[in-house]
Amino acid sequence: SGGGSETVQFDTPAGTLGTFDANDDINKTVSATASQGSAITYTFTATNSVNAFGLTGTSISVTGNNIAGIAPRLYVAATFTFDFTAEIGNGATNSRTFEIDILEDSTCVSPTDNICT
Image 1: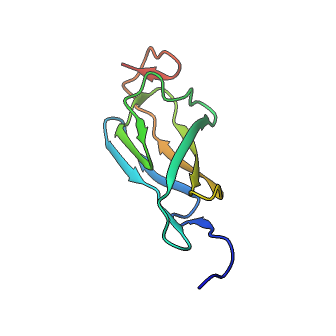
Image 2: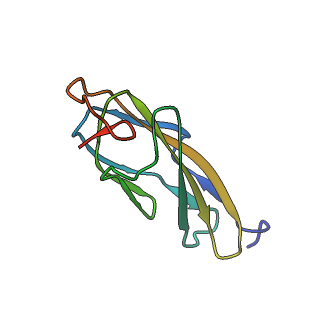
């Protein structure tokens, strides 16, 4: 029934998935849809905005298309950026960038890479 090559598109709008205080539970899933229903494989890279130094030192992790963990205690508010790629079997891909904002924790006084343990 055709219509050309299958494509994949993100359903989740680009941008901020949420704003969190220190110690809040983070559980956010991004989703994509293949035009003909194929299975989708998700990969991601974490890039970072000002004051965010990657996921090292945090409990935040990404499994497939789910971002989960506990918001770290930050000396200065930071934006963690996640670049996701969705791929289907024919090699078609689509990429989109999402962000999680984490507010500063006023009790954080001696951070390492902006994070207090």
